[in-house]
Length: 153
Image 1 (tube, rainbow, N blue to C red):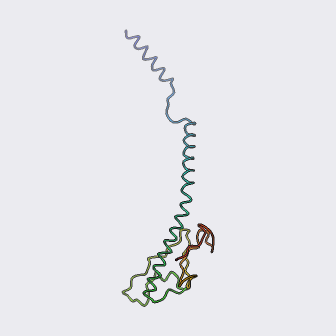
Image 2: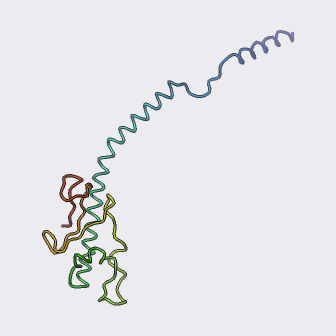
């Protein structure tokens, strides 16, 4: 009786040895997965990149507004705006007339615009006493959309 059982085991082991294992992925499965990932990446890039330009313009507007408010604080303490030669750097250093009781400055450090360039300052400004502005994405005066200059109000 032992013999048939042994024959069954040997036959079963031979089939298991011949049967290929199903480990890993086939080339087709890999290609389909890469195609789907590429498709999803394309959709995300198309929807996100235009919003990045809008976000950079919004950040520049916020920075210009903050610098303009600091400029008004400077004027209240010094009775005048900084000269064109002093520029925005006057907001970082404390006013000389205020003495030792003055705060360290009106802003901690001068930010760069979202495109990595320094903000500009003009005294007198186009429509007022001063202008704080960014030249936009192209870094040149004028322009449209994200390349447009961003001025203080």
